[in-house]
Amino acid sequence: MRKKKANNPVLIEAEELLDESGLTERNKVFCREYIYDWNGSRSYKVAYPDITDETARVNASRLLTDANIKAYIELIQKDLEKLAGISRLKVINEHLKIAYSSIAHLHNTWIERKEFESLTSDQKDCIEEISTKIARKVQWEFNADTEKKEPIDYEVEYVKVKLYDKQKSLEAINKMLGYDAPSKIDLNLPVSLPDIIIQ
Image 1 (cartoon, one colour):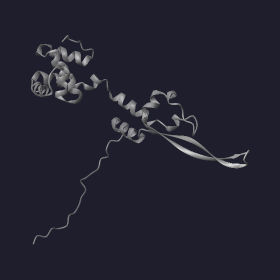
Image 2 (spheres, rainbow, N blue to C red; image 1 turned 90 degrees about the horizontal axis):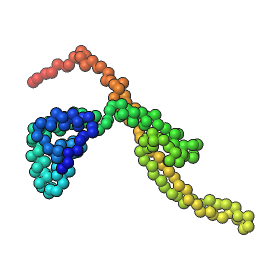
Image 3 (cartoon, rainbow, N blue to C red; image 1 turned 135 degrees about the vertical axis):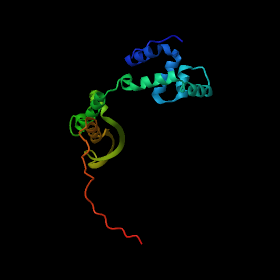
Image 4 (tube, helix red, strand yellow; image 1 turned 120 degrees about the vertical axis):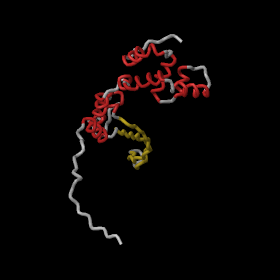
């Protein structure tokens, strides 16, 4: 297997620290796969694709007891946020989109909604669910030839757009920024207990 250079700073640091540890490139692939879902058998089969499920299970268990493998996994895991490109700021920005979204942003008028393609990516990100329903309606119209009202069948498409919960996002933002710090409650109040009579 040709050695593939890591392009992520966290993986580069991990590989530099463990180059003398004797880990093979396949061992490193196993470790990187393992931190995605903690499934040893699956990770082993990614690193060693031509083996049976039973062999993958046994060998993954053996690898996970190796001190160098454990150290490499711990090193990657410590900086998992950097490895995944996630930060608190990114999480807060996603919550801000939801917290300050409005169904009004998805409409031109009270009744006419915007075309989906014309929505911004931030507006699309706030949509949890879109469901449609087509209903058949009957409308009575006056026919001048027969001088009678006649039923006209037509279809109406109903579109339901559900946004993510604004309140949950606001609560998450408050919690992340420490705005909802718990109130201090004094539990050392003088309380008199009734006398207990033992008979």
